[in-house]
Every structure is written in structure tokens, then in C-alpha cells.
Length: 246
Image 1: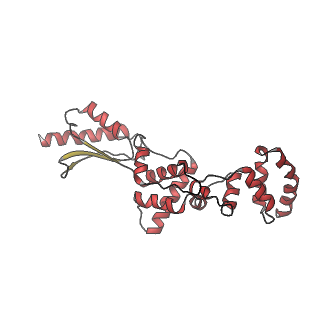
Image 2 (image 1 turned 30 degrees about the horizontal axis):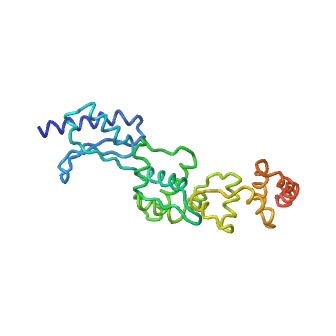
Image 3 (image 1 turned 45 degrees about the vertical axis):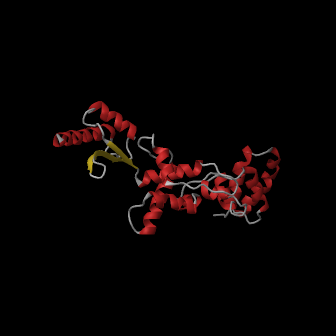
């Protein structure tokens, strides 16, 4: 009976792998394992479908053999980094406080999310930056969930965004430059930009503002109050003076 059930479960694991892993590059290979400590068979996989999806598929295909089966879904380091990035950006915090993300928070975020993957190029770049930073720092090609969350909690996302060379919008270019002097930790940790009118005024007051900063300020003008438009000629003149000639 034990051998017959083992054969059925291993065959079911291969069937589920073929069903849920739609392309070779996707993670999620389902493995049937006997857990001596739990005295039960376990289906284990990484990323891929949710526990609820695999459980439902097992009960549909092999209701008798899957009785008492345990399900363990783990997240790859890329998925943990993705979840930590999303939670850091979206978490509401009080003034002067920074978000702290834990591995359990990431698990909860993706509990009902099959095949976690970056939704934007920025998310993809930040995930790469987080994982690369840990691999490089520890001289090994792996990072656990505690290390990933700890890195983001300690350094925030702005420094990682700079290191991965992601393209910034005009308001982000200015925030990245002026946030430190304007006590704006929300940018450092969560990539929350400063108010556009505050940034525009900062450039006007900054006699050493580079051509890049002045151009970013001018790009904000269409969305600023009418009184800011009066400074356009002044800034354009400064831009011409600060722009190197060929």
C-alpha cells in the first residue's frame, strides 16, 4: 500500500508540474517527499502555483492518494526581493518613521498570488539590485529571506535604485538630489518623491544647481501653480549658461 501510494503521488507530482509550469523558465517543479518527522507525504515546490491551487488539483485528480498530504510552497530569492520591494513602497508610515518588512509579511503578500513576477521594469531592476548586492557582499550565489528584508530595511530603496541605473522621472531626479537636505526619509526608504512645488523652489534657490537639475525643474512647470511660470525665463537663462557647448 505504501509503495502503491508513493508511485501514485510521484506520478501526480509530475502531472501537476506539467500542468502548472507552462514554460521551461518558470519555477514550480512539484516534488513528492516523505517527511519522517511529520509522518506524512509532502508536495513541495518553489514559487509557481499557490497552495490552494495545488491542493484543489490534487483532490480533483487523486482524492484518495492525496488524503493527508502536506503542501509546502517556498519563495525564491527573486520573489522574496520582489515582495519586500512592493511592501516597502506601499507601507504607510508616520512622519519620520520607516517601514520594516519581515519574511512573514512577504509570505502573506504572495499567499494567494501564483507565479510572482515583476510587473514593471523598475521592479525588475530593483529585484536584481537587491539580489546582486547580497551575492556580492557575502561572496555566494544565494540569499535568504532574512538577509533580503534586512538589506532593504537598513538601506532603503533609493540607493539600490541608483546602483541599478534605473531611469528617473524629473520629480525623482530632483527628490534624489534634495531629499537629504530637506529631511525627506520617505524617498530614501520608499521612493516617495517630494512635492513638485517644493522641488521647483529648491532649484530656484540653489545657485549651484546643475543643468540636469534645472532641466528637471522646467519639466515640472506644466503641473505647477501659475505663479511658478514666472520663473521659467530665469531658469531657462540659467540652463543656457550651465549647458556645455560642443
